[in-house]
Length: 219
Image 1 (cartoon, rainbow, N blue to C red):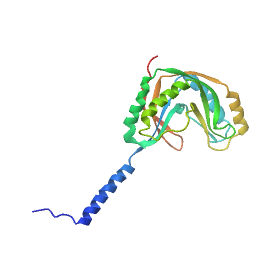
Image 2 (cartoon, rainbow, N blue to C red; image 1 turned 90 degrees about the vertical axis):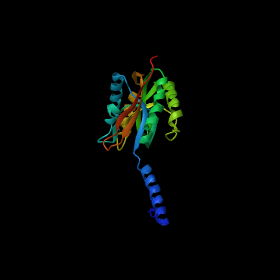
Image 3 (cartoon, rainbow, N blue to C red; image 1 turned 135 degrees about the vertical axis):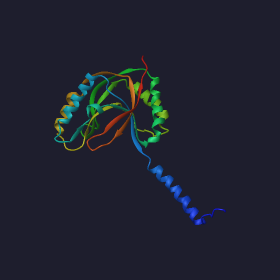
Image 4 (cartoon, rainbow, N blue to C red; image 1 turned 120 degrees about the horizontal axis):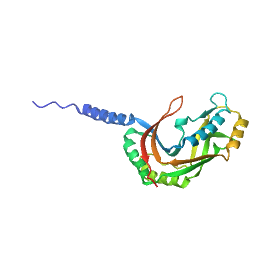
């Protein structure tokens, strides 16, 4: 006995429902927040950097200036942002291209604020040596990463964020601290690894997890 076919309008609704169900699955894909970074591998240099961080935090009462936790201090090579988790293997493959580069040193020196010391939102320590090699790695990865993330059109200015202004603070105190550390040499640190990290934003602060760790070649 031949199966009875659904009426035309029911078949149409079924196809429409299936189509929208597929779209909903796409919309509900899990998104992950990613970035590519290098870290301060020299513990003495990191300790010097955290002294500056503690000094700027002391210029605010409460949470006016939020310092970056020791374990979260890093230099961002490329902020990727939120992407579907299905892209993670391909993005990891992109980041693995860093293994074409040899280990090198960066010189961490000087401090500043974005957009300016008079109107600070982000407080940072600077990089005065190793800039070209950081840029070269970033450019190499970008050739691949742009397939999976929005192009990063901002100028690459290597720096290490150590604090963010969230509320009120003592302006005179902060300017004095920045002036004191303005030309400070925090030290030299080797860059031997490039990391793809996942960031989970929480009220108490972000939690970073390594997804891919790429070892650079011995020089």
